[in-house]
Image (cartoon, rainbow, N blue to C red; front, side, top):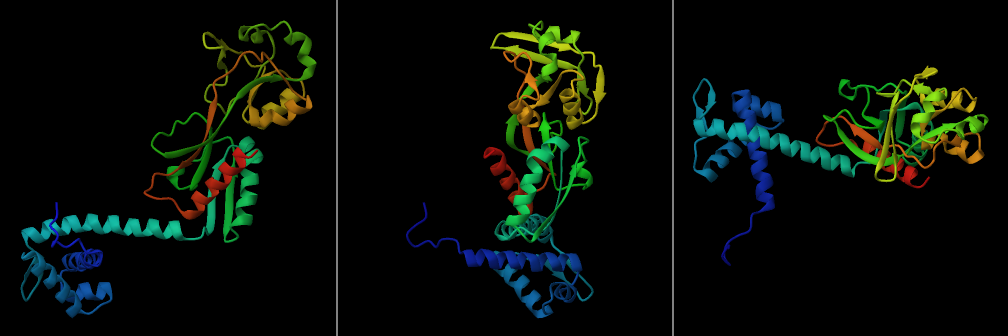
Length: 310
């Protein structure tokens, strides 16, 4: 335990030492006090004085000075290697703090599935740009995923089950998968008692999914049935599948947010309502980074608020 006479570490002293580390690292990298001063935008004398003070404080020679060049001692080299890491961490911390304090601005590039994009992301974009007039949005709405690591977007909204485990993600909601059909199929559907019976009816597959023909249904906690359907029609977009189902081409499995209005109006009806399918997740996915720009964080907050308030 510190004694009553001991002094607490000085914050001002810590910042001064951090600055001296930056001066010292610049000398090692530039090879002279003059070049380091030019790089830092200060005089040679200031750099020399601060590095000398660093050596006095720790009673250690950090640099070997000759008329031709300056080289780090063994202790100086060890300190330089640590200093590079410390200064990098400090720079990132200050950048992150500045982003937290900054008002969101600039162009936000994002991608989302077309169906969820229209129903949830576009309303969030409208609210986001109204709330943050310094921001613009460039959105790609497609059922084909863009590669975040290739720099194509700063934010991706993924619906379903995450496969990009190397990326950072935040869950913003969930959705249910529903087996639906047009009312014109009501008579035929009365004969369907279990999921295995649906194979006798025309199925519309969404080929944008990883496995559009294999489905597992549950009834309660114990009964489970897995079925493999044989599609009569295959389409590569959720909204196209929904349109085909509405027009009576067959039945399909669609996310609840994509068919909520149709179910409410009776344009579509639920099939096998006592059986359920796995609940999927809705995630905001980010490229791996130490911190996220203010515009990204702000948009995700707006999207979550809109989704929870729907």
